[in-house]
Length: 417
Image (cartoon, rainbow, N blue to C red; front, side):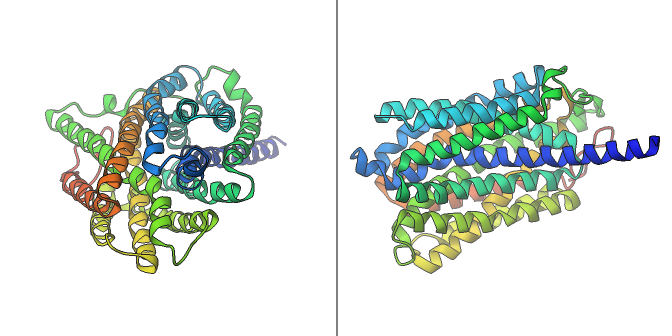
């Protein structure tokens, strides 16, 4: 009887873990969907309804992305002090309400303020969700990759779903419908994990940062400093690449794939297809991160980006679509690498805060990229933007060549280069 009870308990725990991981993945999906709905709206609707051009709308989207980065650190701090599960519930409900409020905007200023609120709640997910994912389960590289695929599908679905609602109900519905879904999921999440939320706020043993248990030799400290600099430097530059491609791609397709798509839905379908297929890159990267380490993987994806960004200028229709698919495969594949490296160095009760710092850097760079897109597009067009991205990828390639061959292990000697 006791054995049967243990078996049933183990099955329930396994099912609960599966539900938890699924809901966290859905959260990542919604996080990216909400932040990029405006990208398709700016391309297809506001220029007609409010008489504004694409480059005139971009500055009003920037506050949301600044909030996306700025509030990551306090979100991580609050999650570590209160409850990570509680913060995820707040994320679902809060971002859903904020999205519905965005649909009520009657002017560009109101839109910018509403998107800022969306960004505040969007900032919760990455530091908190990744802290849960990397602490609760093994096979860190693959878990982060699978979670990242869901985020990528959210990126792609933003164009697809928004395009559909624009064609069949208007841009405001593109904010309202996902908002209602998110609120509903938030209520479910809070109900399922109320035990964790109402308890101490800390699930499991959360020890201090792994580095505190690691050897304190000068060589080891120098190695950790070098990896830390590489992580945050590549975080900033790769965020420029990610934002430029994901935010601008619907507009790029609108201009360059006229032979393949002529409606907002058509542009959204092509963008979704590229983003969905490119998500495979994260699974490939996640597999190899757990086996060969980040250095070789990081250098490979940076080199692929550099080559195909350089090839993109001047391409239209089929060749442009194929080139975009390849550089997005590498751009998406790059996403889990820095999160993997952080998970190997930062553990325990400070993990969400470390991820918070990482995403302050990341999303601040994301927000700063919007003025760059606006200036480059208005002055020279997208060809110049792709050349800038090729140079950015070359910078990443040079920086990550300084990574050690293997990541240092806690309580182990420094890895060799």
